[in-house]
Length: 211
Image 1 (cartoon, helix red, strand yellow):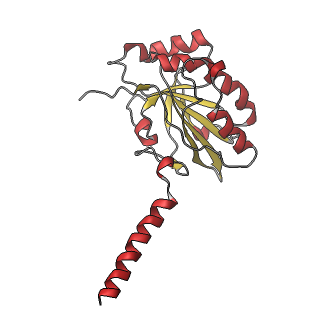
Image 2 (cartoon, one colour):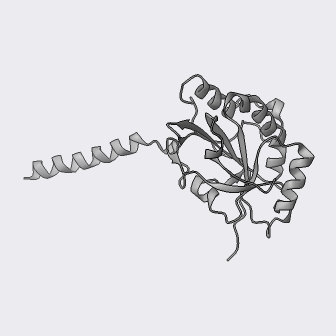
Image 3 (cartoon, one colour):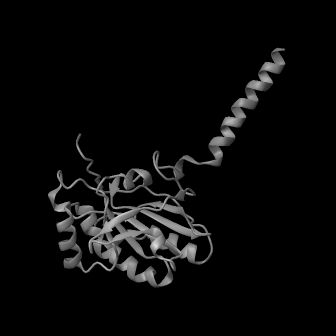
């Protein structure tokens, strides 16, 4: 009887270890989507006052979804790189979709009108959407600006293939020697999985509405 209990105990332990191994901790954000998860479509207002969703773009192979904003110095440092990513990959089927998740009461520079101004000033070539009710960024699990989710389309559905930072230098683009988003999208274009599917996003915390 003791031997049977010990055997059952070991099976439980091993089973737990196996389940942990099948979803490595490094692929998890803790909340929201994880690498491999299906992304639910959404509909948010763009700076042109039109509603935008993933399913609108029938020819896209996927998207580079970036949670970003106006006021954050990290986001500002990455604006030109985000524009460059859109220029690099839109024609290849992976356009950028930028989403501002911040409460504009706490951060007036992140208001919808200010978003329009910033997009015009910088010459954004991609949708810049507002998560007005702050329902989309928690679904993704975004916690910083910028925070990137590269999604891939398969059988009319979208799946997360990469989560994290754009590259490994938050200040100067030419000093970055690891280009995580580029590497992830290039791998997908070659029919492969990203070699690095998860990195830590570094930036300003997302400003939640106060109750």
